[in-house]
Amino acid sequence: MGAAFPAKLRPAARARCGRRRPRAPRWEGTLALLEQDHAFEIADALISESDADETEVSIHCVEDRFVRFAADGPTQAADRERYALRVRARYSVPQDAGGGFREASASAGDLDEESAFAALDRASLLASLADPDPGAAPLGGSAPVEPTAPSRPTQDHTVREKGAWISAALDAAEEAELDASGLARSGVACAALVNSAGRRVFGATSRASFELSCADRGADAETLGGAAAGASVAPFVDQVSVDGTVADVVEAAVQSRAPEAFDPEPTDVVLAPAAVAALLTFAAGAGFGAREFSEGSSFLTGRVGDAVLDPRVTVRDDVTDARIRGLRFDGEGQPRERVSLVEGGVLGRPVTDRTWASRLGLPNTGHGAPQPSARGPLADALVMEARDRSVEELCADVGDGLFVRQLHYVNLIEPKELVLTGMTRGGTFRIEDGRVGAPVRNLRFTQSLVRALQDVIGVGDTALRQGSLMGQDVVVPALAVRGFAFTSA
Image (cartoon, rainbow, N blue to C red; front, side):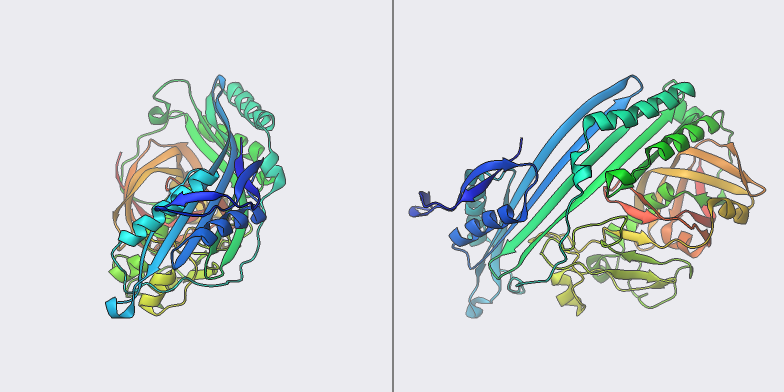
């Protein structure tokens, strides 16, 4: 297991494009996680051998360990390392031919010498054949980036230790006559970007999670009741609340047995953080980016500086938040800025990358994808600020309505107002006289997120990191919302 790294430079012959040239370093040895010096040495070797006018090398390494389990115990376990190397080659176009660059990229799934140089060869060939981009600017040079490191305990967390988590969940579920399933996972990742203009950035992150579903025995538990799910996600393994997740999910599954029918109609709700996350994540890809803003499909378009949402709503993109601890640079090696997207209900500017910042005359906030890419900048470290209401107080504020633990199969219908549709899941309960009461059967909704954030009754006092179906984590509190649009059973 592991990737190969250059131990030292030593000359060799290499044929490329019909000519001979010196070969870059020999890839030797293994390490569990790519280190900065090794990453830079690989990148420097490729850049020094490139005949492109500009060359950029990015390297990603992920090491993760997980155990998937069901009611009868572990069903799958893996201890994996994955490596990705990407080379971007650029050839300048003379001004009398329109200027700009011809460029292309190529990737490799390993860091051995042959794969790395093959990626360089492919990128160079494709770039030489590409159509020129007259608007392409030269690569950015040196940029100050705050260093980050992975969590060693998270990296070293063993399958046996995850087994202890799983045993606790299975024992609690068995005692409540429930079947349990889920995933225990921990991992670390690092990334490096080096280019021929002098940019050299490196960082590392870590993540750990415990996901649990409990259900009455039988295939129709989710429909007929007796099912719930939950998760704890954190940057460090010792911050994962296994006992809390187990207790919460088992209790919710027991309480959701024998649900009642509920007539679908606009209803005041308290959305638990997991339900809020399933909605807010769509704003990242369909609302807060400069491309969508420029194209007019974003809810920010024409509203920057306007008080559109409830004044208790504040959202930022912030990789420095202690609950996220993300990389401090984007896919172009640009330092990532903390961006205020909504401040007290007032809409701010979108996140940008180098291209869209130039087009819109805005600062580059460092939210770009690896280039070249048709995808615009993305706000993928969303944090909604907590306020002052406990979940019990939110339920009291609602009076009569529904408490929704999760939303499932959420999809975007219309981007301008972020109209979303999906279903409740994992425990939905009546709120009666301000208290959580009897369970109800799952409901389908069609709801504008913009409208929901206008019709806020209250905002919870604790924001939690939550995963989402779209693959990115967000930090969100519970929300009480007026007139949430349930449309069918």
